[in-house]
Image 1 (cartoon, rainbow, N blue to C red):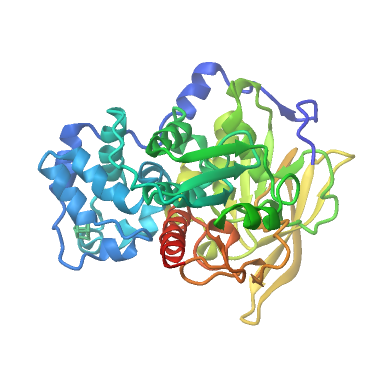
Image 2: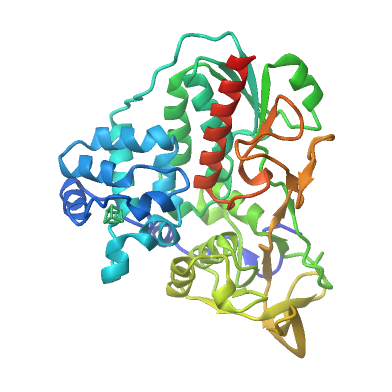
Length: 445
Ligand code: SF4
């Protein structure tokens, strides 16, 4: 609950500035031109390439790698951005090891895939470094579309709509655009203010206005947006966090991992950021790994990820798990939290071992404790404040394949919409496809 730097055991400045700078440097160094050419040479340019099928945005991967190989990095970037306008960020944060690179024929044959993610970054960085925006707007349509939220789905939707000649107004509750790219992803994956630079670059298309501090259900209502605009796209993400349902959850030192990551991403000086001596992260997804690794990099002495199922069931990819282990994070599987102990502030977390009996997860009755002055909850997010009148599916906004909700004139995509993985790349695909459907619908009407 508490984020107070005065909470016992949670202090700032555990490491020197130099150590922090080193720890939070780029996870994967970018390719230079020669390295990119060598990496591109490994591609077989497969017919019916499995890497393309595995990409949620259907980027023509062999085509862009061929363009890099022949020295046309900017053309390669255009190939990528045609399908995925946030191709620069996706090159950094996509779990390529479970998408395109997992099915690359060179991974299958030799256990070493073509480094598609790093090649994609090389291409998009080359183009963005030149300040080039290779898209232009179509003739104005006179249609206005409201986009709610400024995360990946919304940005992809807004850009595609602007390209089609529509005018777009993005309504964002926070102070900055970018959504999870800006607030929710480990900082070593997107160094140097890349998230904002990418948004600035994307906005060069023109025709997109952004209003900040505009939150649905507070200063905005869906009814008013439907009234004022020709179409509405909801990319509002997930704001709620699941409860641990463990005794002592309200103790000082217990907080949501997403808030911890957001604070870290927005910190002007990492040495001001408090972190526990002994940190326990509860959960098994990417957010759990991002929070755990960053706690360690900030100087926590011990960091443990506790996951209630077997390690093979963790939603975080094997690469992410190995990254955590390589940074000194311990992963304890088959453990569910029972209680947070301590006199007001967290001191220990008590867990019960679990087993999967085939009929579901059950406790074994055997318990153990892990010292923890900071406990970070990363057990999934929920949709909060969904506009009334929209049909839900599994707690998220029900949509068709092209993002249509149960209300005419309202589309949705990204994490708030049912179906799909909660990944940046999936959100981009959903935003883009909704924009195409909005455009077709408005032109037909
Ligand atoms: Fe190239 Fe691998 Fe894709 Fe084949 S599967 S086109 S080798 S990146």
